[in-house]
Length: 143
Image (cartoon, rainbow, N blue to C red; front, top):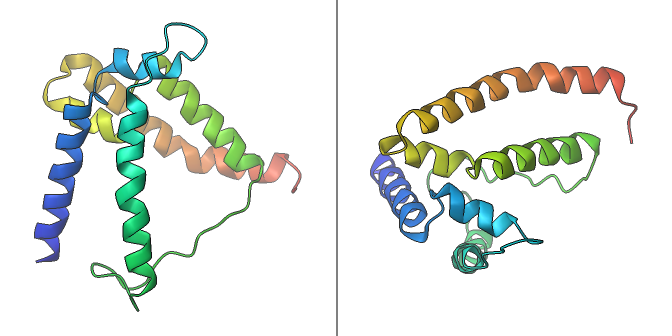
């Protein structure tokens, strides 16, 4: 049953990404171009995600444990150099290509070779991340 719910949620997520235009790199880059030809339409996508998530968090507060897991994750609210560096790298990649991981996977079905190249590069970056994080731990002083 849990796998079916996961598949349903994944299908809804992918359909939402496609219908909203989040898999269209030019639309995403237009959203990010706040000093140029800015396209504010993706704000509705973000609002559409925030509202149901706010309801879900209220429901989750009343639950002893998640339906599809053992325990709720404990949020880490600390802002440190690794978070800032990772966010900047993610933002640069997102801005250059116009895709983040979810839409990149969704675009594989129609994105041709560019979607596959992005996904491969993203996986390489994810593989290199632990080494980069280890290097940052050694070379960047603690906050």
